[in-house]
Amino acid sequence: MKVVGITGGIASGKSTLSAYLKDRYKAYIFNADEEAKKLLNDDIVKDKIKETFPNISNLSLKSIANEAFQNKESQKKLNNIIHPMINQMILKRIKEKEDSYNLFIIDAALIIESGMFEYHKSNGSKLVLVVADEEIRIQRALARNNLSKETIIDRTKLQMEDSQKIKHADFVIYNNTSTSELFNEIDKIIKTINE
Image (cartoon, rainbow, N blue to C red; front, side, top):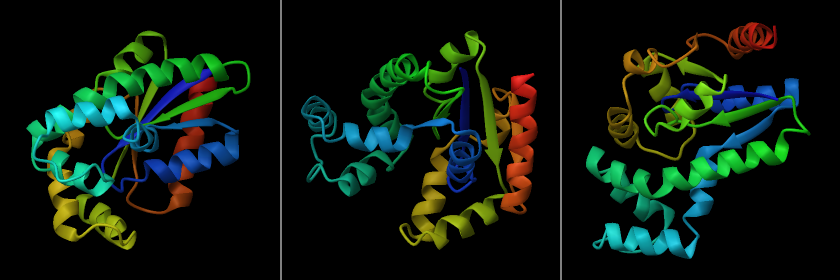
């Protein structure tokens, strides 16, 4: 089973890419954002969040996000709680799925920042970075209707610059045009990985 990490900033197109890989290649998708949200219901995690953020009003997803996205320091504190658990989940899931799938995708916005992909790269896994112009990403994120433009821009500022992420990636896809072009690029990459 090949393990491939897919990362990119907000609204870069990584989730669209993951959905395509699931459909076209029958890949198993580990969505780190979704798994992290599920972890927020865990009592141990809730206790750690209360301890780390004593001023938090409640433990709703919105309150936690508001607290975590205030600045890089707050984001780092939350990530220090969540990322080790996500890493363990990925390793466990890879073991569980290795006989059932040819392709295991780790869809994670912070795969580089968390350091989680260094382990996988040392075992031969590849990392695909999806990038898009900031204005295009803002428009895509606004189309989802769940965040204000101000929030999107603030969250973008907290993410590592694409120019830094590129240094860690094995493949880079520039997703400024159409989804068919995006899919065409990933098809080429999967072909290369499977050779």
